[in-house]
Length: 369
Image (cartoon, rainbow, N blue to C red; front, side, top):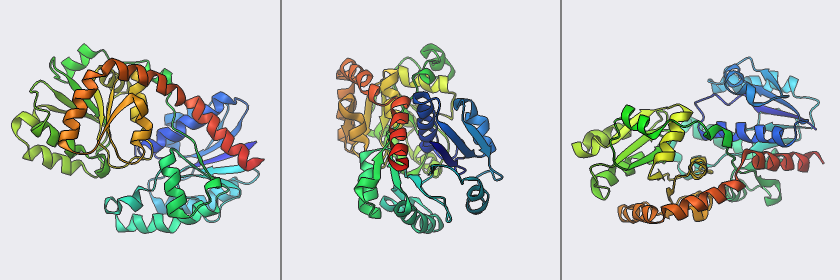
């Protein structure tokens, strides 16, 4: 099979978990089938950030940087269209396919959050997504999604035949979790003290619900030695988090540590040392940090929203978004720590990048057959 993949939308660092999702499944596909004839159409920044992850694949650098939607759409309809002939299929990884687009194509839909929480999107972006996603999905030979939750959403919301929607789960790469900053170094550098640590790795997007954790520190998580570490880039809800902290008592503010984006080694070290990875998100297409936490040996405490209960399985504590539920949830995590860690190590075996890549290959074969 000759496969082309449109990654022109993927600006490293700006598109959240969808970047790692596509990178890992494509790398996993090449691991499972090194002879796969794969061509990636991507930005120069993507090639610089991830090129070495795709041995044997061709990366064709696009003439646009992907930051201006109108430029990218124009380039997809002209530059990409001219270069995407002759493939058995083309995968469009960003939830939309250009018009015109070579057929058959596989469309990857990461989530339909814009329909569940339209208030988190600008009117212009909502109009764009409503104009593009449904038609792109209906014209696709196959739609791939990261979870059964998103599969149900695509079938229900977009009217796509269930037989044409396939789950390609997230995968993690064990080798990327090996490098870990030692706990004592992190405690010293980030002034974490000697007490318990909770970690939330998420950009400050509205649905990530950071404010909820600040409120818990002021109500039910009252241990003065507890530190909440918030890692991840600044998103649209960053100002709301600033306000929540400004309005909080001093004993709450002093227990919140915000290093922002950190190195992979620091992230891995923080999660591995944590009492729990906490994940109070209101919406997720998958929730890959839960799987990474399990691989790193950290218990998970997450909300009961969307796909998170299915991802957590028996390796996490799932709680509704109320103070009482999360107070009890943290107690349960601590009581069952060893049990949850063991369950997590078993569970991640189903979520390697190779297994994700194998599922993607199955999708390609279903279309190209």
